[in-house]
Image: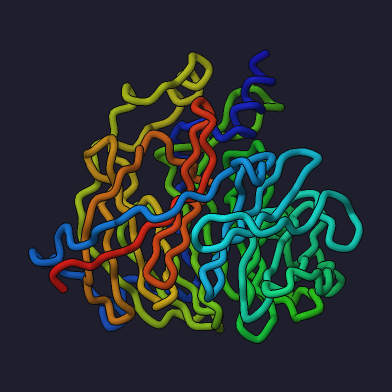
Length: 402
């Protein structure tokens, strides 16, 4: 029973925290985070507090015209404001297209292994006139036209150039994320598979692939994945959750990386070759962590008793890169119901600071919150399975006193 419960805990990503004995900052070997010539300090400014207002405009959800079966997995917005929402469950996938005012247009893709068919969808993105769909189960990318909604082609990933030694450090990895560059080539995220070994350092590796899906062995970037707790049962899987430290990585269409280890508000900027360009740092106080505030069952508590828990929450909850290459960084505070956000320019200037609702105890570390910021709008995912809510909200962003 305990083994089964542990596996279920991992699969559904229940909210618990973790910190292994050998936790380390998750940056590549060529990062130079402590070198002052690369570091830009973000200074707080009084006139930047509460300078963003959100006005809700549109809700995208199931209704009389369409039922989005399964759960929302990914989101993309084109230059005309059309919304593409990927939803999936076992045995079903669909990509639903809505107009900017929320009216339903059409559905793309279907479940299966043939052309324009997929068994899972982990991410979708738009580059140029095409929508790109990534299926981690079939290791396939689908391409659709965003104007005529026609299927263009599918690309199967070719791992033939990779040798066992290329992935030896990870003990095996799974390709589970995709970034499409402006030239039609790809950056793929490979994450080491969970294993019940406290000494194993789980990694994420970013590799390039050409426009035909051939993976190139050399990696752009390598970061630590996230921290785990390990139950005593030999066959039980490790689990992670709300106060785990983890690596956040966002990438623009030119292949520039922004990385953060969530312990601190420190963001490294890497060029398209993976080399460090600069570092943004903002000194904030981590919120105190009280494990009594978390809903832990007996087995979880028994596992956590083996570890020295952190005394604080991570500093950073998530970060998002908007279409103007501004970083939106959500930080964890003493509030149980709000995150404090910072908007930072490419020069490290603090543009705005504001609070927005969010519950730190409901953080899912292995999957970033679904947020897109584009053309002056903030799109976010709202899910409450108990209330039957699974939808995308669109807010107009208004900067105040700029």
